[in-house]
Structures are given as structure tokens and as C-alpha cells.
Image (cartoon, rainbow, N blue to C red):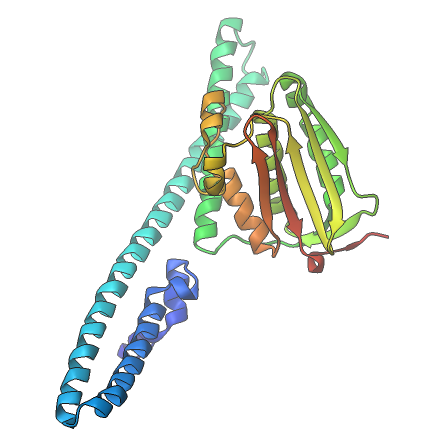
Amino acid sequence: MKEKNIISQLNIANHCRRYGLTLWQCPQFLFLVMGIFVILVAISSYAIGTRFIEDPEIVAVIVLILSAILFTIAVFIVRSFERLAEASRMKTEFVNIVSHQLRAPLSNMKWALEYIFSGRLGRVEPSLVTYLKIIKENNDRMRELVENLLIVSRIEQNRLPQNKERFSLNEMIIKKIALLAPYLRATNTEIITNLTANDHSIFLDSSQIGIVLDNLIDNAIRYSKEKGIITIKTELRDGHMHCEVKDGGVGIPLADHRYVFEKFFRSENALKKETQGSGLGLYISKAIIERAGGKIGFSSQEGSGSVFWFTIPALAFERRD
């Protein structure tokens, strides 16, 4: 058992997976790198010292003191990183547990409300309908937030599953627009499509790409001006499938551009427009696209709208015959 524990402590890859960090962010790996650095500095110091100091004992003492100082600094730095990594891991696990616990009661509330609205319990009094709709809307918002938090925790723990299958990006866009028809009418928004003529079959997780499209289209609708027009375009560009969602909405201030894909960030324009949102959609979209080997970005000017785009690498798609 002791041997297994020692091996486990020396297994840097396991520690990195436990914290959900890349190799160059992992405290144990950084400690190894800094240890090698201290050794190289000690050897270099000794080689240089022997050139200028005749007494080898004095050189050895200087090298030992320098190595001890560097090693102590390395230990303090790595321990600080380890505490931060552990705190981040515990935070992610807490979010994951709480989200799972909230999921069940919110789902039960959803089914209960749908059962009431179905009329199986009898006619719903008109005076109650308004209040029940308010409860339903808030339940939907809470369920969306919980689902986003679950996805974020899985991304941070590197546990977001990928169930790859073949699907058409163009067909997915068309279906999503059809489902959004009532919402588009209610917001007086029109979506124009400019899809590539040569359809391609994509081999990725369709549900995750669907989440990306949902987030980009939903944002475009939310931040569009009155009688807004949104354009969705797909094309082959430099051997990659390129998809972009363009709106003529409020745009994003230049000062906020660097924060757009960060967790929980919402620009000042979004807050002024009083639109609902958790600030997680773009963070999740970026993580999904980058995990798929693609890229995501945007261009925006305050008051003139935004263009959000993502690419799918050539290895993930093929032309449909």
C-alpha cells in the first residue's frame, strides 16, 4: 500500500487530471521543472565560480547557499499554486454537486406545471394562469442556468463527453430556425440564411455543436434592435467549414472585447438592454469549439452589431454525395 501511495504521489499526470489542469499549469510538473532549473543553475554557478575563485570550498558554499535559496523559493511558489489548484478543484466539485441537486426538483416542477396546464386536473382559473406562467418562466431560467453550470464544471474537469456522429450543419441551422419561429415573431426579428451549396457531413458531437449555435443565435436575437435582421452564413474557407452569425444589434464596446469569452461576463450594453443571461454561453461555446479542434471569434462595433463565427477543422467533415 505504501509503495502504491508513493507511486501515486510521483504520478504527475494523475495530479494534473485531478486538478483538471494542463501539464504546464500543474503544480507538481512546475515543481519538477523548477527543480531541474535549480540543478542547472547550481552547475552553472559552480563552473563560473571556479574561474574567478581559487578556493573550491568557498565556491561550493556559495553554490549550496544559492541552490537552497532557489529551492526554498520554488517550494513556496509551487505550494501557492497547489493551494490555488485545490481551491479551484473544490469550487468546481461544489458547483457540480449543487447543480445535480438542483436539477431534480426543477425538473419535477417543470413536469408538475405542464401537468397543470394540460387540464388533467381540471380547468385552470384565468386568475392563476398569469402566476403559473411566471413560475414556469423562472423555472426555465433556473433550469438553463443549472444546465450551463453542469457543462462548465464538466469542461473544467475535462469530463465533457463527446458522442460523435455524422450530421449536416446546414440542416441543423434550418431546423433551429424553424423551432425559433414563434420567438422570432414575438421579437419582430428575421433570420436570413446564406448556406454553402455543397453540403458537408460533420463528424462531431451534434448536441454540442447545437449548443454553440443556440448560444450564438440566441445572443443575436436578444441584442438585436427593433425589427432586427440576423444573417447566418456557412462556407468553406481555407479548407475549414466556417459558420458566422451576424446581427445589427447594440454591439460590444471595444473595452469589453477582451472579456467576451470569459465566464459570467456580460457587457455594459447587455446590462443596459436588461436582457436575461448568465454570461456562460460564449465561454461554453469557446470550450466546445476548441475541444473539437476549431476556432471561434468575433468582430463588433458598439451600435453597429456583431459577427460571431466559428470554424470546424477539415478532418471533422466531408462532402455529402
